[in-house]
Image 1: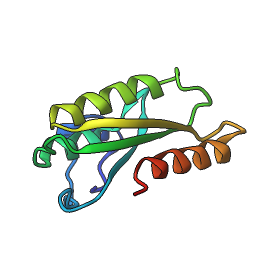
Image 2: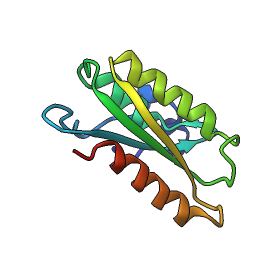
Image 3: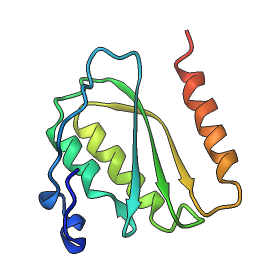
Image 4: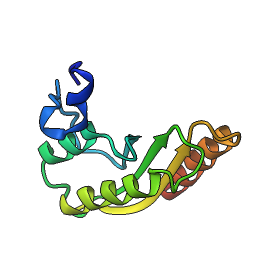
Length: 122
């Protein structure tokens, strides 16, 4: 993403993406983003608006947030993330929220990695 003025980054229309990573030809898709101002970051919203339809692709997604508890923006942001991906045809299998200032952050990351990888083992 390009650097924008502080107030401009809050709206997806103000975000300019430099490139779009390919979403086809993968065994698994895992999307990650962050919580910004108690909702999903505008860059992810802009990205999903521009990618092609995912056509019933099974995906997992995660968010990071500074606050210690999911109810402090994480749950709302995750609901928005799922809605955006499902509108593109994705089937969201798993979600996770990493609370960056929580004392169990490392444990949350390990659990996310274990859970997501267990879904895609052959």
